[in-house]
Length: 628
Image 1 (cartoon, helix red, strand yellow):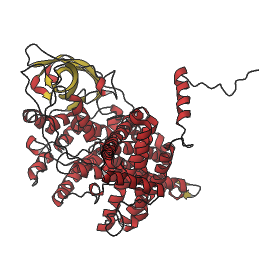
Image 2 (cartoon, one colour):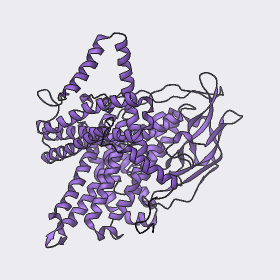
Image 3 (cartoon, rainbow, N blue to C red):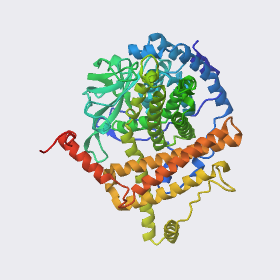
């Protein structure tokens, strides 16, 4: 019996399931049964409330903890996985041969790693988001394996798990959990990358009313050449509530065995070379109507929910990778000598290790705070928080890998050592699961929309003569004009932050108050046209990411020092250092967002870019040119 199966059998606690239902659209055929979508969402408002200049402290303090039984389970499960990756995974060979050996895949299956979050009743481990994040620290030590596992369960089979019928789950999940079948997520097309709503793959209901005929191509599909089961998104014709025919995206479970499914040659990639990435083509593939996931026409929402739910784990995965990198790089810096001194004794080398340690601390803090929020009862909406974790961790990981390679110098640049592989593998993180540019837009616009609705509601109440709302709005304006220090009750007698973090907490509170007033002024200034102001939205998103990161490190460090964790004083040092840096960055970005700010250079940036793009080239004369 595999370790994974033994682990399932030995569990004494079943983690909660979070699925519910609601109808969306109707297909133009009475033969299709109504399906259900997951909608039992418990509203979480921490990130969104920051747009109103509020700190919803009960959502993030105290820092999440797992129960004793879950801690025992993870301590039981982690060592065998660490041992496997340490002894049985040859990452250099996987990278060079651009292939994960069958025996390595078999080992992953035996450990149950293809079914980490699939419920026990379907043969999976049924682990929580927190435990998934913890295992992600280990699996990230080989990027190709990490991508293969994530493509399989974080997105490939997630649609079945989140919105599938009981029949679909019973039919597909057991073999997906064991790894007998591998899953893929098929959304991206040659003409639609970040613009997922523009896909052209089409599924047409056949005359028998029992099958769809699927035609189209998908590109950049992870596991595309290996997958037995694919979640495929295609356009379908539906009737809206007014009886009008419209094209809507629908999600389908497609088996390779259905026929008409072909996989192209694997892409020769810069990094994550051992993972399988290829084009997948569907030609007159017959898909039974019972393989629709959720509702016909409800596929776009499903696709977004799938992508939104998995991004948080990039924080722990990036942290796991950088921790290993720190160990290897610190060993080199502690033994390599130049000018009769160890590299570790030079200030600029020390700065690089401080940058790496700080980034790991923030990544971890954000990832496990978000995972803990997602593990609460119901189906909490943490999509904005998860997106922020992804952006911060992918960019922080890139910085850390670059800094580590710089410490190694020429050694790091050769293929004899793993550092250049880490660099190549890390670059994809800013691109897949939503580019960081798209995610910044999502983060900013989601919060701006939320704030806009709340402010509009208050203005309506004021017009109706609601005195309470009038005094609230006037009071907030008066506080801002008088420059009063913001106080959200995070410190002091009934505070939730440890006294050693008071100064950093005050910085967070001041930033949040200014952020709320900045958002309000932007909404008044731009109105609905804010959606076109990408450079403005970028600063809004970056400020929010820092505010969430500050919150995460303050919450985590407070817990650590309160319960007396080992090296808690170092956590406090890291938290205070990061918060001070983030505070001044936030202030500068928000200054740039003020109307007619001399610090804002956006107009010049746009002019420079417009000329370059218009000419399709760098336009300046060469410095050696002359007019005489």
